Length: 273
Image (cartoon, rainbow, N blue to C red; front, top):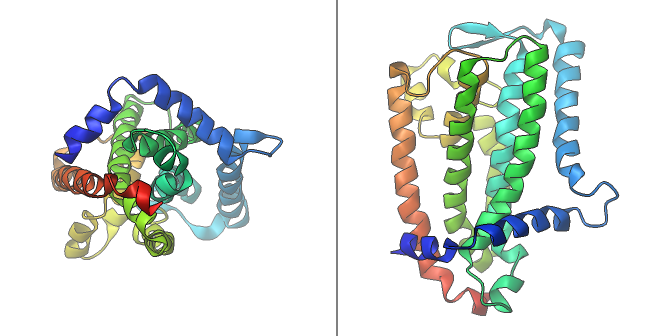
């Protein structure tokens, strides 16, 4: 099975993956005076713009209803944008990972699945730093701390694993076809607006549409972050059992699909690149 092959390629490679993930951050911002700090500065600046626009410039824009409670629009958007930035980085960066690190495939005897892992881990470092900034802001605004904040570790880990597994399929396909990579870049904007980053998927009028939105795993993570930092809702709350079951079903299916694509294309990647 492809999954067995991927797990065997990771055996005993933990330290190497950690070092390569740090190097990936350095390489991405090579030549910049501030180096990897730009990975945090860019999204932090965007968060500042959001704060200024909605907390200062558009004070009359109103609150947002989420799970029966009203929240300040900036807070609602903050807890949606932080996971979204990580998700978009994981989707786009994961799909480009093999092509951007093709020297590991063509010139070295290197376990290819590790490329997706250390690339994704580099994005995880940035995400954790952004979450620290977000948490400080929420504390200052009176939304934390709470015991439910600990659920962040579950949602963060699940989000990382889900989109890492997704890259097992997208990275080899992007290595084979530049058009596939361009397709991913094109649908990212659509995913942003179809996911509950700036609006609440729980408050759609149509019950059918609310159920359909469960099929979008991005909603699961965005809503999960809001449950962790804004509400007192447990991960496995009985009111959201369907959403959780759909996510785990999709995750298991993605593991089989991703590992299948990886095993299918792994051996011919050097020739293609």
